[in-house]
Length: 252
Image (cartoon, rainbow, N blue to C red; front, side, top):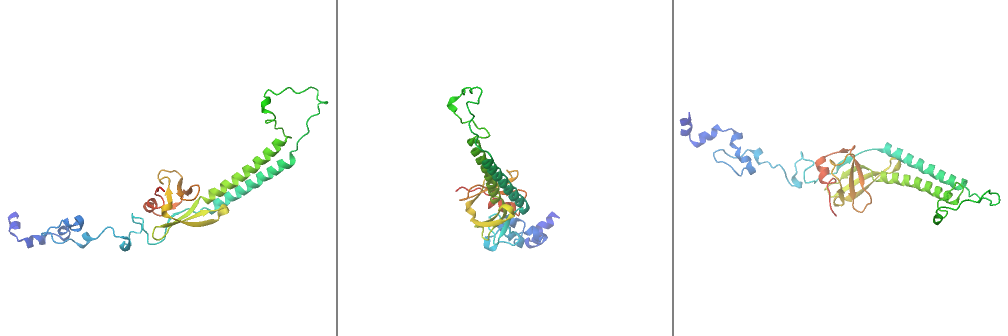
């Protein structure tokens, strides 16, 4: 049998090989290492696995270069009911502490000093005279009245402002615009309302990778105070595309 194969002409020996075998070696670099006896490379061997943005294949909507030819939603987390409850809580706390401050300011009155003639004995001198009356805060003193009212006002305002900023920095939707140069963020207000703004992609920096955080992905936007918070309970459309666009760390 071996002698018979050696006596066959080259063209007859090439006919024994299947089309896949004749193009097997041509898979390297699109047919760069091609054998004359095995024939030309099959069509599938010359197909490119990646092409420039103008000729990208339809079955690769999210390539590794981050370019998209349409608007792509990267992240979504709808929570209008939660922030409606947050707004009601902040408003109720503000009303309560304002009422308590007004009650303390109008109810607490300064009591007159005791009459030394009616006092049975003189008060012993203070052990710390250098402190003066700084800590002499009785229920009827002016310091207690103004201090307690100011504290109630500050606590109520702080709770309301903290809830407002938490809602404004909680992200509901992230949209990568066509061309991958700009990103639209949708954030909440109190009581479940939303608003959107658009920033360049180069002005976005993710401070921690999504796999390194437990619940919240912090995103920093250049020129805006505080971090924008992406809750991991939301849905990410494409993890690779998110990691190389909004989820990437950038230095300014």
